[in-house]
Image (cartoon, rainbow, N blue to C red; front, side, top):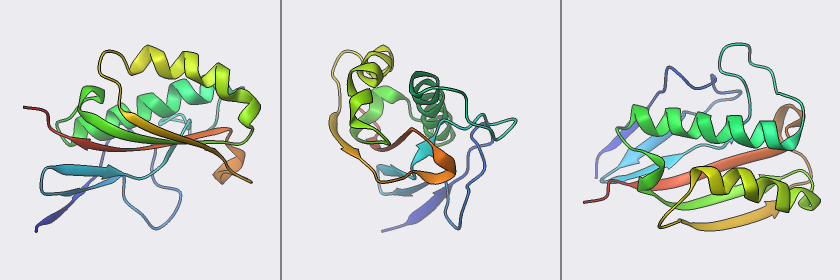
Length: 127
Protein backbone atom coordinates (compact mmCIF):
# COMPACT_ATOMS: atom_id res chain seq x y z
CA UNK A 1 0.00 0.00 0.00
CA UNK A 2 1.20 3.50 -0.76
CA UNK A 3 2.40 5.71 2.12
CA UNK A 4 2.16 9.49 1.73
CA UNK A 5 3.49 12.13 4.11
CA UNK A 6 1.15 14.97 5.07
CA UNK A 7 2.70 18.36 5.86
CA UNK A 8 0.41 21.15 7.06
CA UNK A 9 1.47 24.75 6.51
CA UNK A 10 -0.98 26.02 9.15
CA UNK A 11 0.13 23.70 11.97
CA UNK A 12 3.17 24.12 14.22
CA UNK A 13 6.39 22.59 12.96
CA UNK A 14 7.26 19.20 14.41
CA UNK A 15 9.33 19.36 17.59
CA UNK A 16 11.21 16.18 16.66
CA UNK A 17 11.97 13.76 13.83
CA UNK A 18 8.41 13.08 12.70
CA UNK A 19 5.78 14.32 10.26
CA UNK A 20 2.36 15.88 10.83
CA UNK A 21 0.59 12.83 9.46
CA UNK A 22 0.89 9.77 7.27
CA UNK A 23 -1.75 8.63 4.78
CA UNK A 24 -1.97 4.92 4.03
CA UNK A 25 -4.79 3.93 1.72
CA UNK A 26 -7.86 5.87 2.84
CA UNK A 27 -6.58 6.28 6.41
CA UNK A 28 -4.73 9.26 7.88
CA UNK A 29 -2.76 8.83 11.10
CA UNK A 30 -1.70 12.09 12.74
CA UNK A 31 1.18 12.71 15.07
CA UNK A 32 0.24 14.17 18.43
CA UNK A 33 -0.54 17.87 18.42
CA UNK A 34 0.16 20.07 21.41
CA UNK A 35 -1.55 23.41 21.86
CA UNK A 36 1.39 25.27 20.30
CA UNK A 37 0.57 28.49 18.52
CA UNK A 38 1.55 27.79 14.89
CA UNK A 39 2.99 31.31 14.46
CA UNK A 40 4.91 31.83 17.71
CA UNK A 41 5.55 28.21 18.73
CA UNK A 42 4.50 28.99 22.29
CA UNK A 43 1.94 27.30 24.52
CA UNK A 44 -0.98 29.37 25.80
CA UNK A 45 -1.75 29.47 29.52
CA UNK A 46 -4.09 26.79 30.89
CA UNK A 47 -5.35 23.41 29.77
CA UNK A 48 -8.51 24.76 28.11
CA UNK A 49 -6.57 27.15 25.88
CA UNK A 50 -4.05 24.44 25.04
CA UNK A 51 -6.80 21.92 24.23
CA UNK A 52 -8.56 24.44 22.01
CA UNK A 53 -5.36 25.25 20.08
CA UNK A 54 -4.31 21.59 19.83
CA UNK A 55 -7.64 20.64 18.24
CA UNK A 56 -7.32 23.58 15.83
CA UNK A 57 -3.84 22.27 14.97
CA UNK A 58 -5.36 18.83 14.28
CA UNK A 59 -7.91 20.55 12.02
CA UNK A 60 -5.04 22.14 10.06
CA UNK A 61 -3.30 18.78 9.67
CA UNK A 62 -6.53 17.13 8.54
CA UNK A 63 -7.23 19.97 6.09
CA UNK A 64 -3.82 19.34 4.49
CA UNK A 65 -5.09 15.79 3.84
CA UNK A 66 -8.47 17.10 2.54
CA UNK A 67 -10.24 15.85 5.67
CA UNK A 68 -12.19 17.43 8.54
CA UNK A 69 -12.95 16.52 12.13
CA UNK A 70 -16.09 14.77 10.83
CA UNK A 71 -13.75 12.21 9.21
CA UNK A 72 -12.07 11.33 12.53
CA UNK A 73 -12.86 7.81 13.72
CA UNK A 74 -10.51 7.58 16.73
CA UNK A 75 -8.79 10.05 19.03
CA UNK A 76 -6.22 9.61 21.73
CA UNK A 77 -5.95 12.40 24.29
CA UNK A 78 -3.01 12.79 26.64
CA UNK A 79 -3.37 14.92 29.78
CA UNK A 80 -0.66 16.07 32.13
CA UNK A 81 -3.28 15.93 34.91
CA UNK A 82 -6.37 13.70 34.82
CA UNK A 83 -8.09 16.24 37.08
CA UNK A 84 -8.46 18.32 33.89
CA UNK A 85 -10.71 15.65 32.31
CA UNK A 86 -13.99 17.58 32.78
CA UNK A 87 -12.46 20.85 31.57
CA UNK A 88 -11.12 19.33 28.36
CA UNK A 89 -14.37 17.48 27.72
CA UNK A 90 -16.11 20.84 27.37
CA UNK A 91 -13.56 21.99 24.76
CA UNK A 92 -13.56 18.61 23.00
CA UNK A 93 -17.38 18.61 22.75
CA UNK A 94 -17.29 21.96 20.89
CA UNK A 95 -15.31 20.36 18.07
CA UNK A 96 -16.50 16.75 17.97
CA UNK A 97 -20.26 16.83 17.50
CA UNK A 98 -22.83 14.53 15.92
CA UNK A 99 -21.31 11.09 15.43
CA UNK A 100 -18.35 11.38 17.75
CA UNK A 101 -15.22 9.27 17.31
CA UNK A 102 -14.00 6.55 19.62
CA UNK A 103 -11.61 8.02 22.20
CA UNK A 104 -8.98 7.05 24.70
CA UNK A 105 -7.79 9.51 27.35
CA UNK A 106 -4.73 8.89 29.48
CA UNK A 107 -2.62 10.82 31.92
CA UNK A 108 0.99 11.11 30.82
CA UNK A 109 3.90 11.54 33.21
CA UNK A 110 5.01 14.49 31.08
CA UNK A 111 4.24 15.99 27.68
CA UNK A 112 6.69 17.70 25.32
CA UNK A 113 7.47 21.37 26.00
CA UNK A 114 5.60 21.16 29.34
CA UNK A 115 2.25 20.82 27.56
CA UNK A 116 -0.92 20.08 29.47
CA UNK A 117 -2.86 18.51 26.55
CA UNK A 118 -1.98 16.55 23.43
CA UNK A 119 -4.20 14.85 20.86
CA UNK A 120 -3.65 12.45 17.98
CA UNK A 121 -6.28 11.11 15.60
CA UNK A 122 -7.02 8.49 12.99
CA UNK A 123 -9.27 9.65 10.19
CA UNK A 124 -10.78 8.21 7.03
CA UNK A 125 -12.72 10.03 4.33
CA UNK A 126 -16.42 9.43 4.89
CA UNK A 127 -18.53 8.48 1.87
